[in-house]
Image (cartoon, rainbow, N blue to C red; front, side):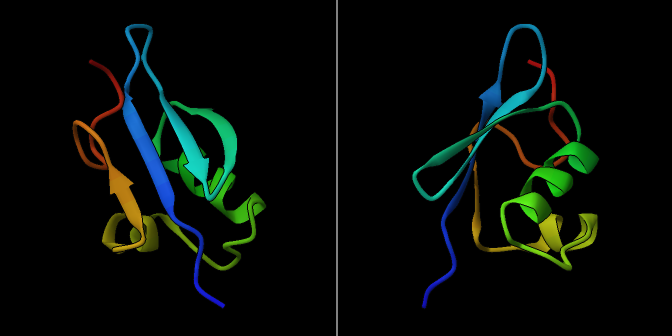
Length: 70
């Protein structure tokens, strides 16, 4: 079974980035820590912030893990 595709959308005007795992929208994360918690709750257990930064499974739109505000 393949790992689900993770998409982190561009930062919104109010800050934060929408997050999708597979076909499920998880919500809007406002930090790397929050994104990591979302992904852990979505089944990527054992992931920490470094795993999120280094993962090739995550598709970052308009900025990487350091960008949370427009």
